[in-house]
Image (tube, rainbow, N blue to C red; front, top):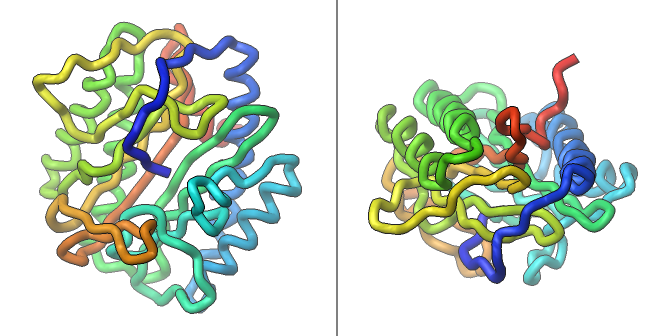
Length: 261
């Protein structure tokens, strides 16, 4: 879940806290893995929300987004031109050719997990398929820069460069964030480079939720009357991928990725 206001200083996590954050994010990864298999023509976003919440609770966690600042559901389910914070609904039925961003968070043993994927519903047109591919690749480019001694702006620049190289645009109104015992902590992690602003140094023990939101058309977005759903101003599709990443001495550790067997 993207945000736009830090409240406190950047917190550094102990190795023990990073282990709990790993467990929290593994539950998120499990939810997203399950949902990926359920994204088919005819399912409603409400059904996906139910599946996500049940999996989360069955694994000893609580859904982090439910009632967060009044958000009415557990899952952010954003279809096509919806960028982020789409509210699940029985009326919103997936059709072939749609794409859906699934953003989920958990609260587990005092810590938060947060990640997102964008999934295609059956046959998606090539340019939208490319949009998803480039957004996910931009996330990985950003993660590569999440190293001790770099600055947050190095992550931002890597994401923006990759997105714009392929002719897509980065959403500027919503950003990634630190994560720990709060869902949204400093630092903010923009997906674009701000030249004149001093950017925090990346140090060991930071945990960052990096989340490019990328539009097929222009960068501008609007918030709908429900006060949550963010849509592209030109109503062209948008993709969103997110991982929670711990800064470790040996490099970035992606907490919300299932370890490869």
